[in-house]
Length: 103
Image 1 (cartoon, rainbow, N blue to C red):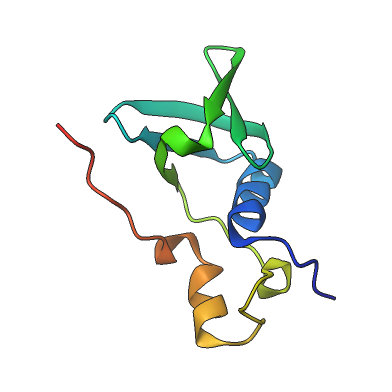
Image 2: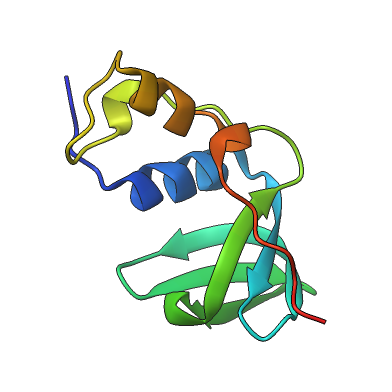
């Protein structure tokens, strides 16, 4: 059964479920490392230094887990359907396009 979650929600949910350590690259070049504890349409709660920090999504360039995170194509909503090459590629964290950090 398809949950019709937007791709970013399915991806962040998989990271949160696995409690995977992540690096969040911000548009200004800063890097934040921690664990995703929650998210909504506009923000991500990232825990680091044993404290929750509110990160606005509009400031985020890339979310990169330290190890591959798997999530099923059934979680992906939108125009893609499970079993298509696009959905299969998107379902793997290695399919994320990573942008360089500005110096």
